[in-house]
Length: 313
Ligand SMILES: [Fe+2]
Image 1 (spheres, rainbow, N blue to C red):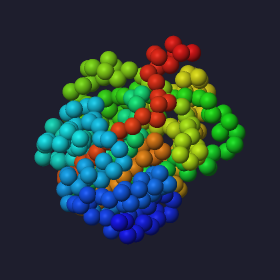
Image 2 (cartoon, rainbow, N blue to C red):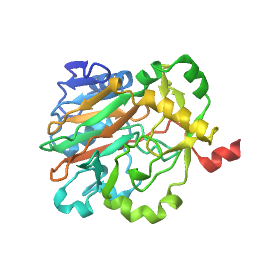
Image 3 (cartoon, protein in one colour):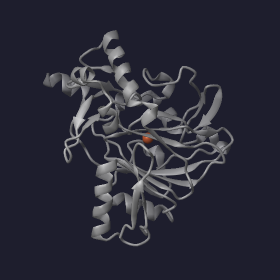
């Protein structure tokens, strides 16, 4: 049984303790965890993972697992685990990139995003597991977009109610149009993204997602925008649309709503990818940070390929 669930940060999330992930989870425990996930969207299991099997077992409590569409990212021996480790010794072949942000080199830095936003089917969620904690940095930020929606002025809520954003994958974050720091510079790209740069437009055509959707189980509205991969508002492909998206993103990325997780080894953090933005602050260039992630499958059925969306009218 789950023995304790308590608030994680002052703004979002819950911390769960008392669950032995090396044992099969009983029905009551699974139900308690699923209820907590639906309520809060972010769950921390502090130092709870004994290894990849415990990581996979907990992940399956929240749905089927899917393999990442970029197979170069699979962890050796575990195709359902994505390796997002940063190791400076093999930097040129790293599965994550090295960027310079505000004049400092950061391995594994990621801007605010939701996973697979550039696909029409967005995964339900994921669980991150810390394997080797970096000696410095490496925090992961989360912002709950149900909370963010409640901060939108009524006029803005009305404006975006029926609008959609176009997204497309880019081969590195310096090419992003929204949400990147002015000072961002790419030092070394992730090996997988370098390898697929030439085929990225063919394999990942643009998609659209609504700016707002309703969480079906609770009726709560979600601010459904990701700065990363965003091209613009579909119904307003002009500077006015870009300005509106920038304004909405300022609410989605409100620093007062952010929770930053400072990792300990064997921590697991589960997040609801349909209502949470996350980012990685990265580690100094010479640090080692080893992490893996599962991808929990699902489809909220509101995403479309742009070509199909335009055909529908
Ligand atoms: Fe991510």
